[in-house]
Structures are given as structure tokens and as C-alpha cells.
Amino acid sequence: MDSIRAFCWCVVGVFAIGIDPSNGDFESEPTCLSRFDYDYKMLQKFVSLEQTIQNLKDSLTESKNKIEDMSRENEQKIQNLKDSLAESRDTIDSGSVYIRWGRNECQDNAEVVYKGFTAGKKWSDKGSGSDTICLPEDPSWLNYSTSNSPRGIVYGTEININEPSGVFEKRVNDQNLPCAACHVKQGSVIMIPGRGQCYTSWNLEYSGYLMTAYSDHHGPHNHVCVDHHPDFIHGGKGNDDDHILYLTISKCGSLPCPPYANDRELACVVCSK
Ligand SMILES: *[C@@H]1O[C@H](CO)[C@@H](O)[C@H](O)[C@H]1NC(C)=O
Ligand SMILES: [Ca+2]
Ligand SMILES: [Ca+2]
Image (cartoon, rainbow, N blue to C red; front, side, top):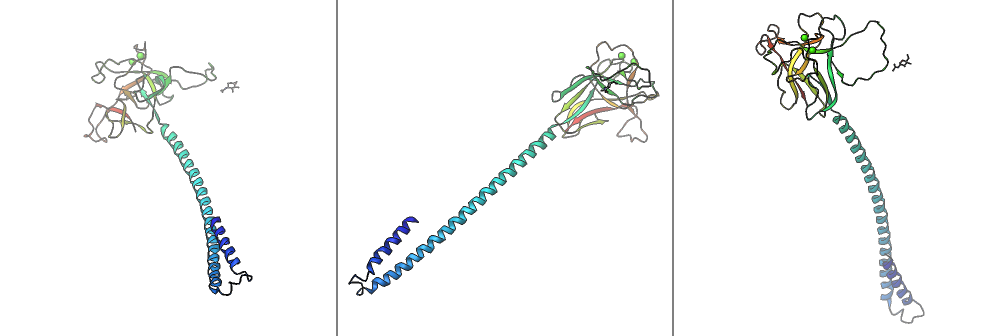
């Protein structure tokens, strides 16, 4: 632009000399005046062109700034999205936990939260908790006292079964049962009673047999899925008859047979996804 301006002023300079009244040739050269008009108009055009270019430059700078602002905003938005995505991934990755009854280890894909002893109410107790629990091998305590105010009681668990069981691959009668709390990456875990296999698209955690209290005892408790290949707590093979697990069978009637069958020991499976 500066070069155009320099050129223009140069042109004006030449014609300013040309129209000098002291120049005798001036009046005989009317074309020079019209040339001046022409060039003057050209110059005006140049000047207005220059103005237009300047305006364009200004609006270009403005647009550039706007685009830069927008892309900065977008970058911030993308960063926020990335952050919330990472956050939700952490939540998804938090996984699930289940108790593996009858084993003191977890599958390869699972992390051991703790190993423990299976426990629950005594078979003959009317009260106490109705659930089976997995007490850690390494208890820690808050306050405790030995006062004899009324309390619930938990006992260690053993299996009662006539041998050979025809179900378990080894002798399990009177053996005390361990347990393990297992953590898996999968978000969902389900124990399915009455299945030895998982449904399609679910991962097998372990399979086993559905066990609960004896039907003729007065101290009922919940069902648990005991691993089909149980481990035993060392030194627990004696007959303690405290919290006792028995196999569970199906009875036809309200329960349709088939698909179910009379007096058949129910399998169970724990699956994750
Ligand atoms: C343990 O007992 C003490 C004394 O009664 C009490 O101050 C404290 O808060 C109790 N601690 C817990 C964890 O309950
Ligand atoms: Ca025992
Ligand atoms: Ca027993």
C-alpha cells in the first residue's frame, strides 16, 4: 500500500509541475489537464481502494480474533468433556464385588478383597441373623466388652451331607468352609440359582451348588452358592454342627416340572458383565 501511495504522490508531483502557470507550454497542452483529471480520479480510486483494503484488513483481523476466541472456547469445552469422560470411566471401572462361598481365593480375573471364614447362626437358634456372612481372617476391633446383655451369635459354617454325596467330587461332610470377597472390573454380578452355566455374553465367576438350612430345622437362614470344588479350613473336619449348610432340592408342584425335577440338587452360578 505504501508503494501505491508513493507512486500516486509521484504522479501528483509530475502533474503539479505540469500545471505550473509559469510553464509556457501549459495552455497548449489541454490533454495534460484532462490527463490530470484522469489521474486525479485514478488517485481517488486508489485512495478509496486503499480505504476498502484497510476496512477489509480490519474486519479480517476482527474475524481472526473471533475465530481464535471460539477455538479457545472449544478447546476448553473439549477439555471439560475429556475430564467428565475420564470421570465416568473411573466410575465404570469401579466394578463389582461378590462373595465366593467355600473358597479362599478368587478367579484369575478377580482381585481378593479379603479371605475369610463362612459363618452364620446355629442351626437350632430361633433368632440371630438369618444371613450367611464371610468373616475376615484378620479381624480388627472397635470397643468390646464381655457383658452378658442379649446378643445375636455367629458360628462357623460346615456342610452336612451323607457320603458319598454323589454331587461333590470329594468328601465334604463336616468340613468347615472358607470364603473370599472378590472384586471384578465388570459393573454387574448376578448369582443365578438353578443354573450351572452363565447366559450368553456373561462371564463365569464360579459355579457350584445352592445350599441353605435343613428344611426340618427351626433356625432358617438364606441360600448361598457354594463352590462346586470347595476348600476347607485347616483343622475343621470335626463335627461341630453350628451353622450348617445343606444341599437344596427342587419340588414339583407350584414349581413347573419340567423344566424342574423332583428332589434334584439345584446348581448355581455367579456371573459378571
Ligand atoms: C469406645 O468407648 C469409649 C468409652 O465409652 C468411647 O468414648 C468411644 O467413643 C468408643 N469408641 C467407639 C469407636 O465407639
Ligand atoms: Ca466341622
Ligand atoms: Ca456336622
